[in-house]
Amino acid sequence: MDGHSILVVEDNPDDQVLTVRALKSASENSPVIVLEDGQEALDFLFGNHARHPCKDLDSLGVVLLDVKLPRVSGLEVLKSIRSSPLTNWLPVVMVTSSDEPADLLEAYRLGANSFITKPINYREFTEQMKLLARYWLVVNKVPKAGAVRSY
Amino acid sequence: MIGRWRYWRLKTKLLFLTLFTSALGIALVCASLIFVENQNYRRQLESELHVIAGILAEQSAAALVFEDNEQLNSIISSLDRIETIQQACVYNQQGNVMTSLAGMDKRECPVVNQQMEVGFVDEVYRLLMPVTLDNEVVGQLFLTSHLEVLRGHIRTFVFVATGIGAVILVALVFLALRLQRIVSEPILKLSKTAERIAQDHDYSIRAPVSGTDELGRLGNTFNDMIGTIQQQNRRILESHDSLERIVDARTSELSMANRELEAFSYSVSHDLRQPLRAVEGFGQALEEDCGDQLNEAGKDYLRRIRAASVRMAGLIDGLLVLSRVSRQPIENQTVDLTQLLQEITDELEDISDDVPSEVHIQQGIRVIGDSRMLRVAFQNLLANAWKYSAREEKRIIDISARKEGRWIAIEVRDNGVGFDMRYIDKLFVAFNRLHTPSEFGGTGIGLATVYRVVRRHHGEISATSKVGEGASFVVKLPVSGDQG
Image (cartoon, rainbow over all chains, first blue to last red; front, side):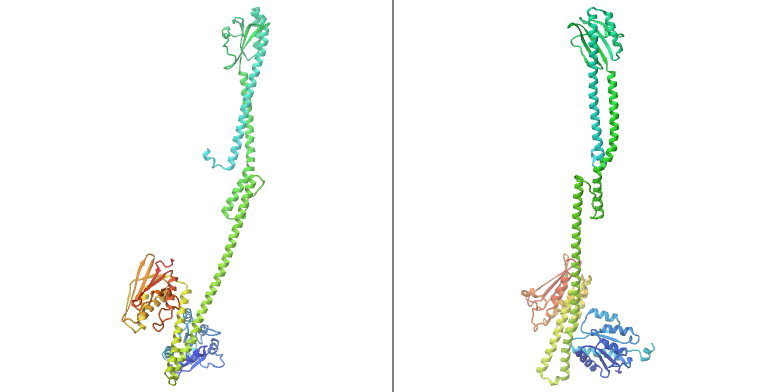
């Protein structure tokens, strides 16, 4: 793992803990940044966040975005990410508890890179996180910092 | 003409009736006047001739007694001046002609006897008068008068009467043309109004009414009737409007309820699953991270906690599917059921590792329906067949289809444990199970979902079984898709 960080946007504290635990077991070296709602995520990504000043967007390997978030929903955050040239290259994986077909369709329509349903079984979830970290942080390539800046 | 009478226009009929009756009346009046006039002239002629004959008879009496022919001739010749006298003969007591009118042969004088015709005979008037002297008949006087003058009078009279009649008739035509309007105009107006109302469906139009005669009353009654229709129309429209408003209100209520239900199931699927995932996840974490600090009983409890959360998640999923097949609109299309069943069977075979399976699916089954819903229904049916035949040495599932009138009947038969037909009533009801969880796991929602899908396709479902001898489920779907 080459140290790309993972941004997790998840409002539920239980899910935050469980997700971080699963990601840590999958890739110990990758920093995990946890944000609690959609507004925080937007502030973070567009450089207005007090607690997590984002120095380097390019260090982000993948964003795990919960579909259902208070205030600004995951789908709205996705829309903002895709509409700004600074962030539209970011790999975004939508995460949800339910398998609502409408959400699935809308997520891909707005440009999600992937869509996963959190299974009840935690072992399965851990397996998913392993797969996900391996694919997006190791297999997948994202543009270098300079390329994004000069865009 | 009578046959065509009904096709005549009302004006023409009225005109015809007026003129026909008037003409008939005029003709009758003229005819009776002519008749009366004719009679009068004849009587006048008769009395004139009688006066003349009386005078002549008186004058010629003495000459007859004395047989003075010269005197008689001079008396008779005085008749020359009277144009109408045609013949005049004087007879003596014995009936011999004594003298006759000048220019007339004595032989032309008729023989005087009892059978002699007098009065108006043929074209003349004949008169025979006795000549008396001192009450003693001394001879006879015979006169005939032609009727030319009389005829001339009558002709003139007929001519004048006909002329006056014709003039009156012409005057009547003009009068009738004007007067018929009094009767026909209101009727025509009424008829025009009725036509306009029928054509435009405008019940606010009223017929013009004047007077209180039968026509006036007819117009008023007609207007009253149209008013009633207008009122009823208004009432119908009003109730239609209010019905529409009610329907709109109900529809918006219903769609609101539907949206709420959707939001509800959405949050159910999200929010009920989340705590379960936490229970299961932290249970797993507890087991992994602190497992060595738990004894066997503790680990068993932990397993039970996790299994319970997984079961509950299954229930929630089942309920969500049931609610989805209940509210989603049906999109009918031709579904290759054979292929769909094959896919489901392949999935089931992939995830099962118990007993060997033998599945027969009839080729070429096609139905009309919503493919997603039918997939859900047959997934549940086949999963059931799969589950309840897991304890046999070999699982045998047979799927066949046959046409039954306007239905396609699809039968899913397994060789599993079956069920007791006494409880058939509970088979398709949600949360009702015919087996204990320790026998076979399950939520009790699967067959309720199948039932819902089949009913929404206007189909029927039935099941037959014998304990230990497998079960057979028959789904009947309409051939054309949407008939009930």
